Image (cartoon, rainbow, N blue to C red; front, side):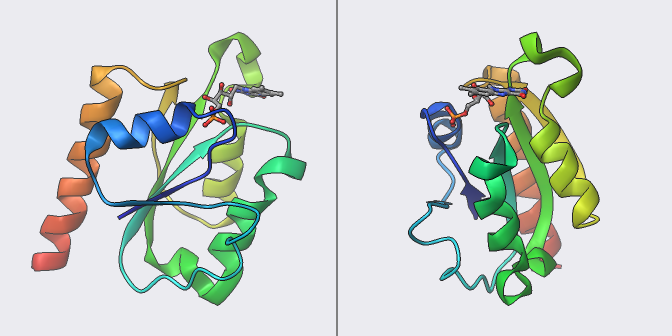
Length: 126
Ligand SMILES: Cc1cc2nc3c(=O)[nH]c(=O)nc-3n(C[C@H](O)[C@H](O)[C@H](O)COP(=O)(O)O)c2cc1C
């Protein structure tokens, strides 16, 4: 399972390209989602006024316990601020930062997410 936030739509398109089950975190649902299975979080980069819903989602019901790691989406033109949201979330919740990509991701980025999801499924079936 993949959880993600998307404002403009890049992250949504990235996740859709993988064909993996997914759920979009929105201002309407973020504090109602109680997770009961392993997942990967895909986080676009914006100011915390926008991305706080991902922090709240991870904190709520201790959902972070099911999070296997974080993918970060951003834009390299932001230089040192590239993907800082995903980096901060990984640090704040002591979660692995799995991969960073730009915009809707290229085929390598999509394959990385598919690969990490396969790892997750294999670990669950052990
Ligand atoms: C107002 C605004 C601020 C942004 N700030 C950053 C940033 O600090 N670092 C970064 O890597 N990308 C930044 N981005 C780029 C977005 O994170 C990137 O386009 C991402 O793909 C957007 O995901 P979404 O289309 O799913 O909302 C910013 C984009 C916008 C519109």
